[in-house]
Length: 471
View 1 (cartoon, rainbow, N blue to C red):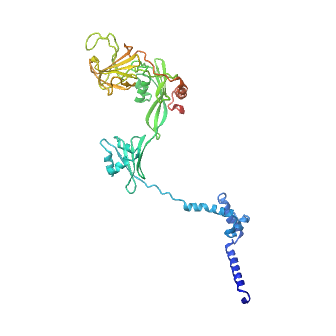
View 2: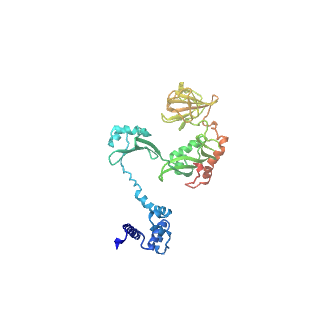
View 3: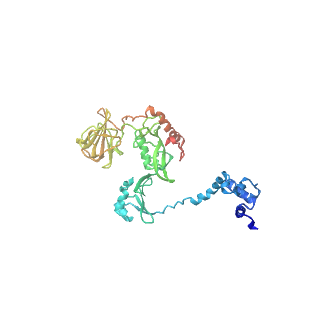
């Protein structure tokens, strides 16, 4: 019978049978299965819980699209399929970041006599590598400056190759050096401590030193407070029992641990019933000083005493000279202290003379402005660089206490003259330093108002919350 059909008809029938068979194999066997496939792709990101209920979903056009050859599917369906497959593809192709190799650290405390060469040798490295490190980029060369008490650490990888060097100068500053592609590079890392304001107050019962200690002030803060008010108050002779003080200062913390005390922000001192308030202020030029609430500087243009020492002989124009034995005016004030005690310039000025000056021995004379001059005599030594014409600043060391010239023992003879006339430096009215400029008063008041308010309201409190204006 097959012979009755032409050969080309038989070939066509065979091809048609193959196509129909392939269609049955590729098409889903159950319309619900096709619907489950469609829901899974379209709603995988938004409603994954609906995968458990695919049988209730109606058969949509997507079922037909799924059963059609790939070339005949609607254009939007391949995009959905590609979108659904994307997470799996990304997971498969995502690069795996290798874990950084763990470094092995060696740390040494720097002792007196240690050198960078010996420290590198202790760590197992030669001088050639040391030179490569200190000749690196950035701050790497600062590794050459070492001080006893600092610590240095070396970090190596699994192969023993040096990767990092860390020099810890103190808790706030360190030098980090790290290997780069083309050598080493260093960077200084500094940490800023957290300032926390603290309030203390007390009443003087015997001395400022003991009363301040009882109030919780350390010696440095006590000296700083005395320096702030020392322009108007002589803390040796003017202090009376019952005088009061209040101080608002900063404690400095690092990692919640107190490491130091900071600056006095504001203070109040009541001496013999007279109240004086000091507020710390940094002007637009970056200069910091203490002022009264109305902007007047607490600092004077001239120090009342150029040395922290007791008076051994006061100003007396009728005094009998201890060496010559005759009545001879003592035109200055003598201060007794150990030999070598630094002597400070009483104010900004120009050195008129520096050298041997007869009975004064080694002496320095400074001119302050047009009408005030000061003299410092009987020095053991004059500070380096002190010579006629040199400009000096208030508080600068100009010499060291001694007993040169006509002196019975080590002391400083200090003279204060106005228009060439000797005056008692301990009682003369001193010229004020410059107040806050009028153009800067608004800024001054804005910066100090928070401090003044905190000082006035903080009695009995230990911790005070201050706003940013006080920082």
